[in-house]
Image 1 (cartoon, rainbow, N blue to C red):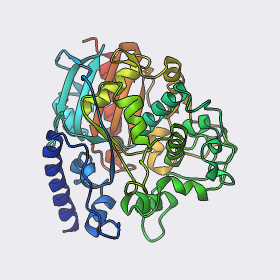
Image 2 (image 1 turned 45 degrees about the vertical axis):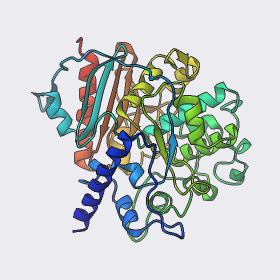
Image 3 (image 1 turned 45 degrees about the horizontal axis):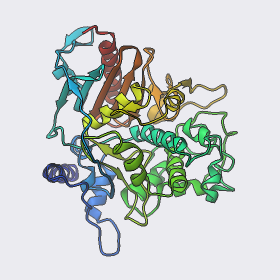
Image 4 (image 1 turned 135 degrees about the vertical axis):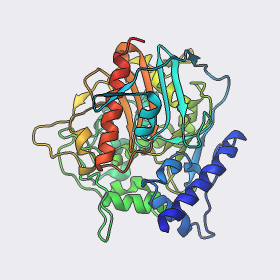
Length: 424
């Protein structure tokens, strides 16, 4: 009965979102009680947002359930050319499978393939269309990297070899004291934080952040860094940590002297000529909460594709140099995350991440020369420079660590390889 109620509430949220997007609204404030707390029913939906079947709808209804910070668009829309083509079949268990069936099998909400800047396929499922805004999850980390590059380009950040404490002195005396911006970008802070979400009677630190900052909005996500110690020498070990990325967002606020949503609008969204607004999830009301820059950006399918095309074209898009070409090169220079003496990756990400490499908040998970922005439960902006291919897949995989999630990931990446090897 609880799961059914949550599913129905998510469906109602999705039904509300669509007309609002059509009317041009940027975000809608979720219900907040007079004392500023989150109503129990909303908290229940938030807490179960990653679970099936409700994740299929919640992943594109975020502004109905969470605090949000708008990132408005402006000016002429940068066009995307189109050449609709029949894509090759996927191969599943040695047998061909059409794209429609593959999209269903791999829990797809929306899917887009571009080559040479032209859309070859664009499809939507589950009450979504070109106006729907989908959560990025950790693809937001790659967007954060773009914003750091923009801040460096305009001189707000003098060097990524500066210490985090140059901008956030509150971190002095913590595990982040002495850590550079570069080390945060590479997930090599050395801070003692494990990205492991164990709930129950004794939740892990990461689970507590989820419950307190994201679900209940009683804490700020980045403030956890004030209570974290050091485990390794900074720079010596790769350790995937959303907390590292949240500090990058804090640095950006201090360096640019403006909220992250405002900087995103000014430095990225409006110069790119995006088709629709975007928005950041936040961990509290305006004036209290911060943008959840490690996991909480939301945008339309085509606008995610525009981000991928900009990266493919070395930072240039819409007739403008959005990011310096050398920043794109640095950010996507992937090094192995396997360090001598490193502990294994956290259990929730052991399989894919154990064989991967990392740049400045960008991943590689295969041997094709591609790199990607990668988000929880099947969110991808996949960029293959050799064939000038950009693939965006917005999904609702089962929860991380499950065999079904692993299967969906493997079959998704296998089809991406099929697409980049396809001659068209």
